[in-house]
Image (cartoon, rainbow, N blue to C red; front, side, top):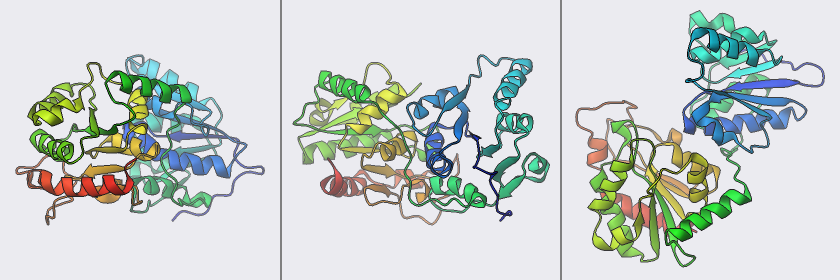
Length: 351
Protein backbone atom coordinates (compact mmCIF):
# COMPACT_ATOMS: atom_id res chain seq x y z
CA UNK A 1 0.00 0.00 0.00
CA UNK A 2 1.13 3.55 -0.65
CA UNK A 3 2.35 5.72 2.20
CA UNK A 4 -0.35 7.31 4.39
CA UNK A 5 -1.58 10.69 3.22
CA UNK A 6 -1.33 13.57 5.66
CA UNK A 7 -4.11 16.11 5.05
CA UNK A 8 -3.21 19.79 5.12
CA UNK A 9 -3.82 21.71 8.37
CA UNK A 10 -7.58 21.99 8.81
CA UNK A 11 -8.23 19.15 6.37
CA UNK A 12 -8.92 19.22 2.66
CA UNK A 13 -10.78 22.26 1.37
CA UNK A 14 -12.07 21.02 -1.98
CA UNK A 15 -12.40 17.41 -3.14
CA UNK A 16 -13.20 15.94 -6.55
CA UNK A 17 -14.37 12.33 -6.99
CA UNK A 18 -14.22 10.91 -10.54
CA UNK A 19 -16.76 8.18 -11.38
CA UNK A 20 -18.11 8.55 -14.88
CA UNK A 21 -20.24 5.43 -15.39
CA UNK A 22 -22.26 3.19 -15.25
CA UNK A 23 -25.41 4.15 -13.35
CA UNK A 24 -24.98 1.38 -10.79
CA UNK A 25 -21.29 2.13 -10.40
CA UNK A 26 -22.02 5.78 -9.61
CA UNK A 27 -24.33 4.60 -6.82
CA UNK A 28 -21.63 2.21 -5.64
CA UNK A 29 -19.25 5.17 -5.34
CA UNK A 30 -21.55 7.03 -2.94
CA UNK A 31 -20.35 5.16 0.19
CA UNK A 32 -16.83 6.44 -0.55
CA UNK A 33 -18.27 9.93 -1.02
CA UNK A 34 -20.00 9.54 2.36
CA UNK A 35 -16.69 8.58 4.00
CA UNK A 36 -14.94 11.62 2.54
CA UNK A 37 -17.74 13.96 3.58
CA UNK A 38 -17.73 12.60 7.13
CA UNK A 39 -13.94 12.78 7.45
CA UNK A 40 -13.69 16.31 6.01
CA UNK A 41 -16.98 18.04 6.93
CA UNK A 42 -15.65 21.49 5.94
CA UNK A 43 -14.65 20.37 2.46
CA UNK A 44 -16.66 21.15 -0.66
CA UNK A 45 -17.12 17.83 -2.41
CA UNK A 46 -17.64 17.64 -6.20
CA UNK A 47 -18.29 14.60 -8.42
CA UNK A 48 -17.31 14.21 -12.07
CA UNK A 49 -19.67 11.85 -13.90
CA UNK A 50 -21.54 11.40 -17.16
CA UNK A 51 -24.80 13.21 -17.81
CA UNK A 52 -26.82 9.98 -17.89
CA UNK A 53 -25.71 9.18 -14.33
CA UNK A 54 -25.95 12.64 -12.77
CA UNK A 55 -29.52 12.23 -11.50
CA UNK A 56 -28.34 9.52 -9.11
CA UNK A 57 -26.53 12.25 -7.18
CA UNK A 58 -29.35 14.80 -7.02
CA UNK A 59 -30.20 15.94 -3.47
CA UNK A 60 -27.28 13.92 -2.07
CA UNK A 61 -26.31 15.95 1.02
CA UNK A 62 -22.67 14.91 0.70
CA UNK A 63 -22.26 16.41 -2.78
CA UNK A 64 -21.89 20.16 -3.33
CA UNK A 65 -21.66 20.04 -7.12
CA UNK A 66 -21.93 17.52 -9.95
CA UNK A 67 -19.89 18.06 -13.11
CA UNK A 68 -21.85 16.18 -15.78
CA UNK A 69 -20.06 15.28 -19.00
CA UNK A 70 -22.46 15.70 -21.93
CA UNK A 71 -20.83 13.87 -24.80
CA UNK A 72 -23.14 15.55 -27.34
CA UNK A 73 -22.11 19.02 -26.19
CA UNK A 74 -18.42 18.14 -26.05
CA UNK A 75 -18.44 17.38 -29.76
CA UNK A 76 -14.78 18.02 -30.46
CA UNK A 77 -11.45 17.88 -28.68
CA UNK A 78 -11.29 21.66 -28.20
CA UNK A 79 -14.62 21.70 -26.34
CA UNK A 80 -13.63 18.67 -24.29
CA UNK A 81 -10.32 20.14 -23.17
CA UNK A 82 -11.98 23.46 -22.32
CA UNK A 83 -14.50 21.65 -20.12
CA UNK A 84 -11.82 19.60 -18.34
CA UNK A 85 -9.78 22.74 -17.69
CA UNK A 86 -12.86 24.47 -16.29
CA UNK A 87 -13.45 21.62 -13.84
CA UNK A 88 -9.79 21.54 -12.83
CA UNK A 89 -9.74 25.31 -12.31
CA UNK A 90 -11.92 24.84 -9.23
CA UNK A 91 -8.69 24.37 -7.28
CA UNK A 92 -9.12 20.91 -5.78
CA UNK A 93 -6.59 19.89 -3.18
CA UNK A 94 -7.68 16.23 -3.30
CA UNK A 95 -8.76 14.31 -6.41
CA UNK A 96 -9.92 10.69 -6.11
CA UNK A 97 -10.14 8.83 -9.43
CA UNK A 98 -12.07 5.55 -9.31
CA UNK A 99 -11.80 4.75 -13.03
CA UNK A 100 -8.72 6.20 -14.79
CA UNK A 101 -10.75 6.64 -17.98
CA UNK A 102 -9.35 9.16 -20.49
CA UNK A 103 -11.84 11.87 -19.46
CA UNK A 104 -10.90 11.38 -15.81
CA UNK A 105 -7.22 11.53 -16.63
CA UNK A 106 -7.61 14.86 -18.45
CA UNK A 107 -9.12 16.42 -15.33
CA UNK A 108 -6.53 14.83 -13.05
CA UNK A 109 -3.77 16.19 -15.30
CA UNK A 110 -5.11 19.75 -15.38
CA UNK A 111 -5.99 19.84 -11.68
CA UNK A 112 -2.45 20.01 -10.28
CA UNK A 113 -4.05 18.89 -6.98
CA UNK A 114 -1.44 18.27 -4.25
CA UNK A 115 -3.04 14.83 -3.66
CA UNK A 116 -4.21 12.76 -6.62
CA UNK A 117 -5.31 9.34 -5.39
CA UNK A 118 -6.33 6.25 -7.36
CA UNK A 119 -5.99 2.47 -7.52
CA UNK A 120 -2.67 1.09 -8.75
CA UNK A 121 -2.49 2.14 -12.43
CA UNK A 122 -0.64 0.66 -15.39
CA UNK A 123 2.89 2.01 -15.67
CA UNK A 124 1.99 4.61 -18.32
CA UNK A 125 -0.53 6.34 -16.00
CA UNK A 126 1.54 6.35 -12.81
CA UNK A 127 2.89 9.85 -13.36
CA UNK A 128 -0.63 11.32 -13.11
CA UNK A 129 -1.15 10.30 -9.50
CA UNK A 130 0.69 11.22 -6.34
CA UNK A 131 -0.67 8.24 -4.40
CA UNK A 132 -1.97 4.84 -5.54
CA UNK A 133 -3.14 1.73 -3.72
CA UNK A 134 -4.18 -1.83 -4.54
CA UNK A 135 -7.96 -2.07 -3.96
CA UNK A 136 -9.37 -4.79 -1.74
CA UNK A 137 -11.65 -7.52 -3.04
CA UNK A 138 -15.22 -8.01 -1.85
CA UNK A 139 -18.45 -6.06 -2.17
CA UNK A 140 -18.07 -3.59 -5.03
CA UNK A 141 -18.75 -0.45 -2.96
CA UNK A 142 -16.22 -1.62 -0.39
CA UNK A 143 -13.67 -2.19 -3.14
CA UNK A 144 -14.10 1.40 -4.32
CA UNK A 145 -13.92 2.75 -0.78
CA UNK A 146 -10.72 0.76 -0.15
CA UNK A 147 -8.92 3.20 -2.45
CA UNK A 148 -9.30 5.71 0.41
CA UNK A 149 -7.17 3.64 2.80
CA UNK A 150 -4.13 5.94 2.52
CA UNK A 151 -6.37 8.65 4.00
CA UNK A 152 -7.09 6.41 6.98
CA UNK A 153 -10.69 5.83 5.82
CA UNK A 154 -12.32 2.40 5.91
CA UNK A 155 -15.68 1.11 4.67
CA UNK A 156 -17.82 -0.04 7.58
CA UNK A 157 -20.98 -1.14 5.85
CA UNK A 158 -22.08 2.19 4.36
CA UNK A 159 -24.83 1.64 1.81
CA UNK A 160 -25.15 3.28 -1.58
CA UNK A 161 -27.06 6.52 -1.14
CA UNK A 162 -29.90 7.83 -3.30
CA UNK A 163 -31.84 10.68 -1.73
CA UNK A 164 -35.47 10.93 -2.84
CA UNK A 165 -37.59 13.93 -1.96
CA UNK A 166 -41.03 13.68 -0.36
CA UNK A 167 -42.48 15.07 -3.58
CA UNK A 168 -40.84 12.33 -5.66
CA UNK A 169 -42.18 9.64 -3.34
CA UNK A 170 -45.65 11.19 -3.47
CA UNK A 171 -45.62 11.33 -7.27
CA UNK A 172 -44.60 7.66 -7.39
CA UNK A 173 -47.53 6.80 -5.14
CA UNK A 174 -49.92 8.66 -7.44
CA UNK A 175 -48.40 7.03 -10.51
CA UNK A 176 -48.75 3.55 -9.05
CA UNK A 177 -52.32 4.24 -7.95
CA UNK A 178 -53.09 5.25 -11.53
CA UNK A 179 -51.80 1.85 -12.63
CA UNK A 180 -54.17 0.13 -10.23
CA UNK A 181 -51.65 -0.61 -7.47
CA UNK A 182 -53.51 0.09 -4.24
CA UNK A 183 -52.71 -0.17 -0.53
CA UNK A 184 -54.07 -3.73 -0.53
CA UNK A 185 -51.36 -4.81 -2.99
CA UNK A 186 -47.70 -5.70 -2.59
CA UNK A 187 -45.63 -4.25 -5.41
CA UNK A 188 -42.67 -6.11 -6.92
CA UNK A 189 -40.51 -4.13 -9.33
CA UNK A 190 -39.04 -6.41 -11.99
CA UNK A 191 -35.93 -5.75 -14.09
CA UNK A 192 -35.66 -8.44 -16.82
CA UNK A 193 -33.06 -6.60 -18.89
CA UNK A 194 -29.30 -6.32 -19.22
CA UNK A 195 -27.20 -5.18 -22.14
CA UNK A 196 -24.95 -8.24 -21.71
CA UNK A 197 -26.44 -11.59 -22.71
CA UNK A 198 -24.41 -13.36 -20.00
CA UNK A 199 -26.28 -11.40 -17.32
CA UNK A 200 -29.78 -11.60 -18.81
CA UNK A 201 -32.01 -14.41 -17.56
CA UNK A 202 -34.33 -15.63 -20.35
CA UNK A 203 -37.67 -13.88 -20.80
CA UNK A 204 -39.61 -17.14 -20.64
CA UNK A 205 -37.94 -17.95 -17.30
CA UNK A 206 -39.06 -14.59 -15.92
CA UNK A 207 -42.57 -15.22 -17.25
CA UNK A 208 -42.78 -18.61 -15.55
CA UNK A 209 -41.38 -17.23 -12.28
CA UNK A 210 -43.90 -14.38 -12.15
CA UNK A 211 -46.73 -16.77 -12.97
CA UNK A 212 -45.69 -18.91 -10.02
CA UNK A 213 -45.47 -15.83 -7.79
CA UNK A 214 -48.92 -14.55 -8.81
CA UNK A 215 -50.45 -17.98 -8.16
CA UNK A 216 -48.84 -18.09 -4.73
CA UNK A 217 -49.93 -14.59 -3.64
CA UNK A 218 -52.90 -12.86 -5.26
CA UNK A 219 -51.97 -9.54 -3.61
CA UNK A 220 -48.80 -9.17 -5.72
CA UNK A 221 -48.54 -6.62 -8.49
CA UNK A 222 -45.58 -6.49 -10.87
CA UNK A 223 -44.11 -3.33 -12.41
CA UNK A 224 -41.80 -4.13 -15.33
CA UNK A 225 -38.85 -1.73 -15.54
CA UNK A 226 -37.34 -1.00 -18.92
CA UNK A 227 -34.79 1.37 -20.38
CA UNK A 228 -33.83 2.50 -23.89
CA UNK A 229 -34.47 -0.32 -26.38
CA UNK A 230 -35.80 -2.69 -23.71
CA UNK A 231 -39.57 -2.32 -23.89
CA UNK A 232 -39.92 -5.21 -26.34
CA UNK A 233 -38.22 -7.52 -23.84
CA UNK A 234 -40.52 -6.36 -21.02
CA UNK A 235 -43.55 -6.97 -23.25
CA UNK A 236 -42.24 -10.42 -24.14
CA UNK A 237 -42.02 -11.35 -20.46
CA UNK A 238 -45.58 -10.22 -19.84
CA UNK A 239 -46.84 -12.04 -22.93
CA UNK A 240 -45.33 -15.29 -21.67
CA UNK A 241 -47.07 -15.12 -18.30
CA UNK A 242 -50.31 -16.96 -17.62
CA UNK A 243 -53.56 -15.01 -17.69
CA UNK A 244 -53.79 -14.32 -13.96
CA UNK A 245 -50.19 -13.12 -13.78
CA UNK A 246 -50.60 -10.87 -16.85
CA UNK A 247 -53.54 -9.20 -15.15
CA UNK A 248 -51.25 -8.40 -12.20
CA UNK A 249 -48.42 -7.06 -14.36
CA UNK A 250 -47.90 -3.58 -15.80
CA UNK A 251 -45.46 -2.59 -18.54
CA UNK A 252 -45.35 1.24 -18.51
CA UNK A 253 -46.29 2.89 -21.78
CA UNK A 254 -43.50 5.44 -21.36
CA UNK A 255 -40.02 4.77 -20.02
CA UNK A 256 -39.62 5.95 -16.45
CA UNK A 257 -36.88 8.43 -15.67
CA UNK A 258 -34.15 7.17 -13.38
CA UNK A 259 -35.47 8.98 -10.33
CA UNK A 260 -39.05 8.01 -11.15
CA UNK A 261 -37.89 4.41 -11.35
CA UNK A 262 -36.06 4.78 -8.04
CA UNK A 263 -39.16 6.19 -6.33
CA UNK A 264 -41.21 3.23 -7.58
CA UNK A 265 -38.58 0.80 -6.29
CA UNK A 266 -38.71 2.61 -2.95
CA UNK A 267 -42.48 1.98 -2.84
CA UNK A 268 -42.11 -1.74 -3.59
CA UNK A 269 -42.29 -4.65 -1.19
CA UNK A 270 -39.37 -6.23 -3.05
CA UNK A 271 -37.22 -5.77 -6.15
CA UNK A 272 -36.49 -8.71 -8.47
CA UNK A 273 -34.15 -8.66 -11.42
CA UNK A 274 -30.84 -9.24 -13.12
CA UNK A 275 -27.48 -7.91 -11.99
CA UNK A 276 -27.92 -4.34 -13.22
CA UNK A 277 -28.46 -0.81 -11.90
CA UNK A 278 -31.94 -1.26 -10.33
CA UNK A 279 -30.56 -3.78 -7.84
CA UNK A 280 -28.21 -1.09 -6.51
CA UNK A 281 -31.07 1.40 -6.48
CA UNK A 282 -33.00 -1.05 -4.28
CA UNK A 283 -30.15 -1.11 -1.75
CA UNK A 284 -29.89 2.68 -1.85
CA UNK A 285 -33.63 3.17 -1.12
CA UNK A 286 -33.80 0.34 1.44
CA UNK A 287 -36.00 -2.06 -0.54
CA UNK A 288 -35.28 -5.81 -0.16
CA UNK A 289 -34.06 -7.49 -3.32
CA UNK A 290 -33.51 -10.80 -5.07
CA UNK A 291 -30.99 -10.78 -7.91
CA UNK A 292 -30.51 -13.48 -10.53
CA UNK A 293 -26.81 -13.96 -11.16
CA UNK A 294 -25.41 -15.12 -14.47
CA UNK A 295 -21.74 -14.53 -15.23
CA UNK A 296 -21.22 -12.15 -12.31
CA UNK A 297 -20.27 -12.94 -8.73
CA UNK A 298 -21.79 -12.07 -5.37
CA UNK A 299 -19.33 -9.18 -5.08
CA UNK A 300 -22.14 -7.01 -6.46
CA UNK A 301 -24.53 -8.02 -3.66
CA UNK A 302 -24.73 -5.77 -0.60
CA UNK A 303 -23.79 -8.01 2.37
CA UNK A 304 -27.06 -7.98 4.30
CA UNK A 305 -29.71 -10.66 4.69
CA UNK A 306 -32.43 -8.56 3.03
CA UNK A 307 -30.50 -8.62 -0.26
CA UNK A 308 -30.19 -12.08 -1.77
CA UNK A 309 -28.82 -13.45 -4.99
CA UNK A 310 -29.45 -16.79 -6.64
CA UNK A 311 -27.23 -18.55 -9.15
CA UNK A 312 -26.72 -21.90 -10.83
CA UNK A 313 -24.22 -24.18 -9.13
CA UNK A 314 -21.72 -24.55 -11.97
CA UNK A 315 -17.95 -24.81 -11.91
CA UNK A 316 -17.64 -22.29 -14.77
CA UNK A 317 -19.26 -19.40 -12.91
CA UNK A 318 -18.65 -16.68 -12.06
CA UNK A 319 -16.66 -16.06 -15.23
CA UNK A 320 -17.49 -12.34 -15.71
CA UNK A 321 -17.51 -12.91 -19.47
CA UNK A 322 -19.63 -10.81 -21.82
CA UNK A 323 -20.22 -13.68 -24.23
CA UNK A 324 -20.64 -17.43 -23.85
CA UNK A 325 -21.36 -20.29 -26.29
CA UNK A 326 -23.80 -22.11 -23.98
CA UNK A 327 -25.17 -19.73 -21.27
CA UNK A 328 -25.76 -22.70 -18.98
CA UNK A 329 -25.64 -20.51 -15.87
CA UNK A 330 -28.80 -18.77 -17.10
CA UNK A 331 -30.62 -21.48 -19.02
CA UNK A 332 -30.20 -24.13 -16.31
CA UNK A 333 -31.28 -21.85 -13.47
CA UNK A 334 -34.94 -22.83 -13.37
CA UNK A 335 -37.87 -20.56 -12.51
CA UNK A 336 -38.87 -23.01 -9.81
CA UNK A 337 -35.47 -22.69 -8.11
CA UNK A 338 -35.61 -18.89 -8.21
CA UNK A 339 -39.23 -18.88 -7.03
CA UNK A 340 -38.27 -20.81 -3.90
CA UNK A 341 -35.77 -18.08 -3.00
CA UNK A 342 -38.18 -15.30 -4.01
CA UNK A 343 -41.06 -16.69 -1.94
CA UNK A 344 -38.95 -17.16 1.19
CA UNK A 345 -37.38 -13.71 0.81
CA UNK A 346 -40.75 -12.05 0.32
CA UNK A 347 -42.10 -13.75 3.44
CA UNK A 348 -39.07 -12.74 5.52
CA UNK A 349 -38.34 -9.25 4.29
CA UNK A 350 -41.08 -8.06 1.92
CA UNK A 351 -42.97 -5.00 3.03
